[in-house]
Length: 469
Ligand SMILES: Cc1cc2nc3c(=O)[nH]c(=O)nc-3n(C[C@H](O)[C@H](O)[C@H](O)COP(=O)(O)OP(=O)(O)OC[C@H]3O[C@@H](n4cnc5c(N)ncnc54)[C@H](O)[C@@H]3O)c2cc1C
Image (cartoon, rainbow, N blue to C red; front, side, top):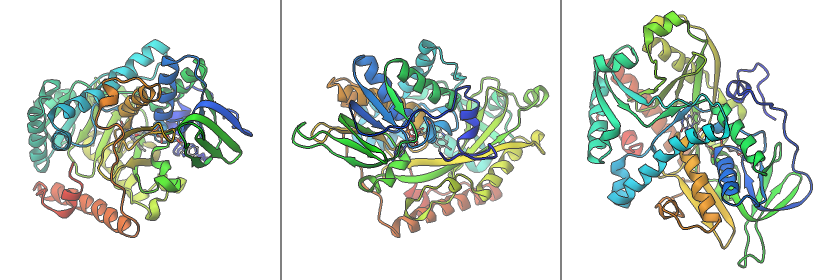
């Protein structure tokens, strides 16, 4: 298993403070047979297992993970239960029409309450708090983006879940230096990713699901002939055959040849402060633990943890040629240093604060920014993937959609246009590298320039158009 010996690495903070026993579960050994075999013990794989077992308690569900449950993005994220996708309502409406746009956004939003309900029902204390979200315009350059955000919410008929705040209103919630206003949303929650993913794994086991850890899936064999040849996961230690195989590896799926260009692994990085004192919190506010962000093009996200730390996350770590994913990419000193500077810029009263942890991990970015929930009865292969940085609530939705599809139920969820769609593939290398690096660097530069000059980005640059949501 890839761990970080100093305890500051990818798997450590959330998993080590999850309160769960991290001793790896037994490997899958030899060959086997099951009803549903799942690659990946992150939220997608585990929600799918959980929802299947809720619907059909006698089902044999087996989950395989190369490392341990929660090793991937599910155990390292920013702790936001995000009530939306990364693409705008206008974009969804353009592609699918107004009714489908609303159906998709409503469905994703249900993931937030479903996670809260699950924690209550299963007795899992995952620090879940539905404190809402606050996106602030930090400086004049971000005001037009805030106006556009509000106009988009009104046009989509979703403004009833949000509140427009002036500078004083935003400061009443969180005192962010330079904030000229913000938009507060009621439907977001924050939680402890490690407690959620490890609690979910235990809940799956309580319902009879089997989880094998340290088991590397090296190949996937699709089924054929209408059930005559059943699909299988080939591991480094044997083959697991099943009626249905679920691929829930998100960014890591790109390491399997057939899915190499289905997603782009993009690193999101995080720094964590030491716990703040009561006096420091009194200065800042943030009592409701809102999911906090600004309108930077290159994305930032902040969380107040239950134990009183500030988590500051952001994009900007460089894409790696050939979509490589390696433990050493979880850290990028330039990006981590930038995030540490941001904490002091947002909250000048914290100048000199100590940072205790820094980590990161790969997001799965689809070429059209939209997730896919897929099930092909012919091959027996199912998959939920492509959440960009919004996978916490969406993976819960994926679990419910996939469970409905696999058990043959036709529901509102199985009618969503995200089901069984074929998204475009990413370009081959070196085009992919050149394009993605260009956009990443340009967005960072545009943000720096806006912050320096106070002028908003024009929206007309190639990078902005390529990254437009
Ligand atoms: C730093 C960071 C911050 C984020 N912040 C947020 C946030 O605040 N809010 C939000 O909504 N989303 C956030 N996300 C995204 C969100 O965490 C993910 O979209 C979500 O966790 C994906 O879950 P998953 O189960 O599909 O994938 P993962 O959690 O990545 O799980 C995949 C699992 O598959 C296993 N695996 C992969 N390949 C193999 C193989 N060949 N054989 C066996 N096992 C394999 C891996 O070990 C892993 O455990 C963030 C992501 C990162 C990296």
